[in-house]
Amino acid sequence: MSNTLGNKLRVTVFGQSHAPAIGAVVEGLPAGMRPDMEALSAFMRRRAPGRDATATARSEADAVEIIAGLNEHGETCGAPVVGVIRNTDTRSRDYSNLYRSPRPGHADFAAWEKFGDARDVRGGGQFSGRLTAPLCFAGALAMQFLQEKGVAVAAHIARLAGIEDDAPDPVHPVFPLYAPDAFPVVNAEAGEKMRAAILEAKRAGDSVGGVVRVLATGMPAGLGDPMFDGLENRLAAALFGIPAVRGVEFGEGFRAADMRGSEHNDAFTVEDGRIVTKTNRHAGALGGITTGMPVVCRVAFKPTPSIAIEQKSVDLQTRKEIPLVVGGRHDPCIVPRAVSVVEAVTALVLADMILEGAM
Image (cartoon, rainbow, N blue to C red):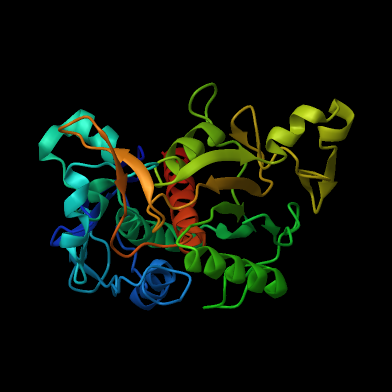
């Protein structure tokens, strides 16, 4: 199914941006796990809209109602865990003109080609970033499972509007990367510059993009299968499911193409009886198989396509060019809210691999 992620830990996302509700069905969590609902709610708030001037004004609590999968003691019981999130602040009238005129850079035109007039234009339908809320619900459960296994996942804004954040140590990263409820950067000064760049774009009716770096520590070595089911294969495929992702790279990524082997290779050594590498340019996987070193990945997000500046589009019925002004409430930059989404998707993939390895 196109809306389902994972093999052993399977997540199916359902709903649309302006449907009565959105949610996720999570299959494969071990029975007897007691979700920490307070921690889950705190994780959901990091992605929720309407909480900062740099985000959309749409206000949603993103409160999750678990309607199945827990027993009377609040433990997973072996049945699929189903979480529902009600949509409460929708303004569908803002999108009425998009039935005839697709937004440049958005999925409107592609959706029309595939689904015709049956497509749901309201809020972007199933193509909206709103669908990342159920991913965060499922990812929060996966992160709690990983925590029990000694695996930690954290992300931050690596770059936004050309402004760079400090890079954590890829060999021995220190978590947390930033204070709770703070702008998700290591260097607070860089974060203030990023916020200023977002607000400047917002005032201009425009948008900006950026890059999120995610790190995971504690992954056991030996997980993943060549040649099409390795760590990078699975993680990249899942991350590309997040709306607006345009690139994924591991370790040195494209920079590795300009390096020599002597520069890129990670020398092996022994640390506390474990075979490790002195550096971590391979980002935790060789041949698609985990090495036990931290997983390091960068995810590039494009600027939000829904902008207030007048753009050129076409009338789908008359086939003539027309000007388009996009209404509604949109993020001038989705990157700050996407940090938790990248963490969630990474956690889902890693938890799935650990559960497979335990079979």
